[in-house]
Length: 260
Image (cartoon, rainbow, N blue to C red; front, side):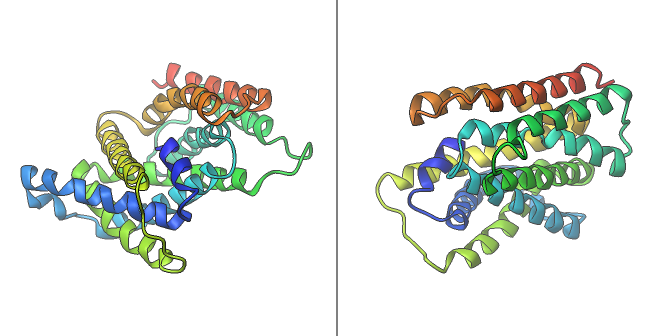
């Protein structure tokens, strides 16, 4: 999804990328509804679904905007502060335990943020702040998904994500609308399917484990995207970003190791 976002950023603004991503995902949901039943279009908590997806949409906007502006490794490193915010919010709203190891993990994670952004050493790029904002929004979204899985299926959560995201993204895409052409369609299909798959897997995972355990597990994306950025886009492996990412990784590992 990160590579697709980078490729699409040269042709579309962020809202248009989000529109096509959500529309393709919505179309892909239809066969699942035919197979699993249209009862998955009903939710016991419509207000919670809408609020959750407003936060999720805000997070996606910040993430896709940054993908087209700063290095992929920096985006992913800052995005992986999401477990820090998730741990705090899970403690506040889900009554999950905030144990001493988790407190230490949060502190180490914040140290990683400071190392990556280095406030005062140089001007912080607005895209970096956008990713941090996206991480907070994702954390709220994850917490709400964890809560919603108690009453709604993962497919229901996907349905409402599409119902909320598509009209919002379309409304903001009208100004300066550009129709896709050629290779863009390939990236649009891939970004839609990969985004849908990621959300379904996350929703399923939240049914089986605590939020503070699930979220850190996808940290493996960071070394992969750093290599992709280096090989495909000739992005330098910034030692500050890598060092900060190492601290964030250590925080997440500590969080997982002492999850119980």
